[in-house]
Image (tube, rainbow, N blue to C red; front, top):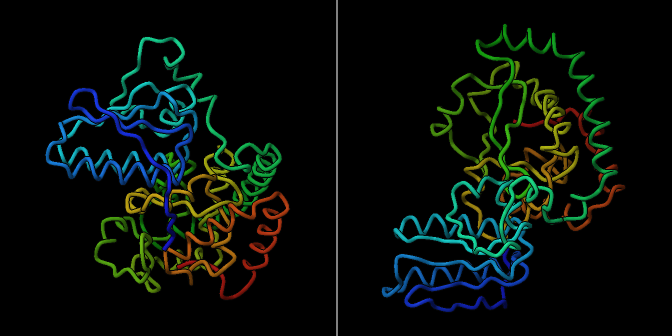
Length: 332
């Protein structure tokens, strides 16, 4: 399991009987781990009041682990019937909350000082650089060019694929599923439909052969005959070029998780959301369907983040194309 021991102390003060957690300048993985432990201690104390204040006045950087720890403790606070209040958030951090939609569910109190007041539109232009790939305009250019080429190929193959899907199984041609992207932002990822129309409702009846916060079944009965072919050739993923063009995804990145997977994450595992999810990546060229342990996916995603460069992306794209022509390639 991915783990990281934190030596970062989170300072707690009190306003009367109300605990105030003072966050540091940067709210990343080590601080997020310490923050989670601090909150757990406060929640377990019998004399804790019905309110906890999180002071962001000194914080100007937050990554996906910081977001993850807030979401986790917010759920616990609601279970404990405790108000979880964030105060004095600057524009950079507020931009992240606006991106992820947390500004709509968190209780946020701002002081009257002009420097900490939030403007949602300007906040979104001051998002943190959680990884070098996020600010690379060359990577984005490669994504746009690759997406346009991919959509052209998708257009050529659309008619035979659409006819095959319709003849094989009643239902729509496309399947849209909510996934979590950069910093946990949710988006709808598109695929050619490869399962029966009620696949999501039947999921609970299918045995999960994977370990951890992922779902896989080698002989999933929900997959149609045409869907099985599309998956083996990775043709079902062609519509994701639209997600790449929009900027929700990249050609190369980490595996895009579903919201129910993310809800099971421990704080360090949120690191995989520091980069955009990709159509391909380390998990794709290192077994894909054969990778059945969530911890292995985490390891591969963190490996990608550590080794990232434009040349590294290009090598992964070339390896992906080569794998697509192998008989044993594809997903199930």
